[in-house]
Length: 439
Image (cartoon, rainbow, N blue to C red):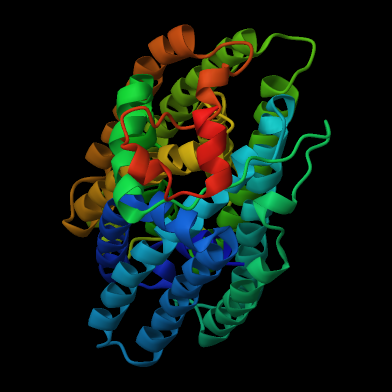
């Protein structure tokens, strides 16, 4: 209801507007503030708790959706859209960090791929519902702009999402399927928690090899949704394309997470290599295919209102498959990234820090991509940079998979090491947590 509806809006290209520059600028500042806030969102999550963190995070999505309704009514309100983008960057960092730490802490080691798949399915159901709403309300639309009714529908859905975290269970209430309790999120002082960012890197430096993959994981959206979907399709075709893309993401995540990464008959270390090979091959196949379509048009032609492909055209079916394959790839890449993080620890506090790194770098990549789009960089250049970054991310991740992923999480990886933190700081966590760490 929050990020799912947001991706439905993004999937329409330009936020459903004729001129995509305002949306590109808003997205650039959104992800820039997201990148910065992600460095500290893990600390905030550990202090406020996941339910309140999720609730505060979802508010930003409602405000952002509302800004597009405003600019549809008042075309000179671009500054308001960009401002709400900055606010959403802060809120999104909170939501995604809380979600990531809970999703990776609740399951047993054997279920992490499945839980990630469940999350990704629910997340993309928001995109499916939102795209369906957009497609239905724009079916007879000839203006190439999303109607007010579409934005109102999106806004209502996101406001419902604001209150859904109240129905969730806190980690200390969760009992896993093997009878064990999920590790409780500790509540340390600001000083010791900020120091954990440094401790996490020092005690588990292999996470650095995943940084290129993190950076590339959201970089792809700019070309896919603005420079392909938004550039050459009519508004109703864009809605249907988004629907197909988000549906394929559900299947991609379930395929990799449940059938490959959680395959019980195969050791976890072997599954990690299977996952890497599959994702790498899909990266190559998806971009080789898309390259031949990208060669057929330029930004200049798209801006001049060249003919837009509609759902009744003979060429539509071939072009929509690019969206389907890239949606499949996106979910596989992000499922694999989450799974690798989950393989490094089972402790929510440590996972919150790692997830903060993930979302921060992911957002830095997205901010760079949206900035290049707003600056009018050639579509082909954005496409080639997307391709190169994804390949590089997989290559850098390979040594980490080989050297760091084991068949079972080691005891020392269960909790965030605090050997370098002063005892006075550790004791501020809780008496129970301090006793456990001393033991």
